[in-house]
Length: 98
Image (tube, rainbow, N blue to C red; front, side):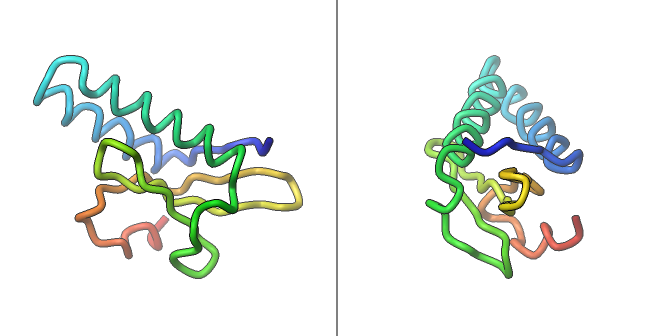
């Protein structure tokens, strides 16, 4: 299994989305963060199961929430680097500024 690193901007993406969901329904933000955690765990086990979307950046869509995890694979260190967790309706070019 690969290790994972979630970059600070991706952590901020997760916090902001969880806060937004909690405003809609109490506890929904916790469900969102749990789903992100599950998806990152899946990615760590199967990093190449997700398609390359931009250059060497792969994306994995969450199962319930309309968000994509953007990540790269560092084969040398057997690490998955999560650079963004963005809503699917947002501009996908946003990850490039990270």
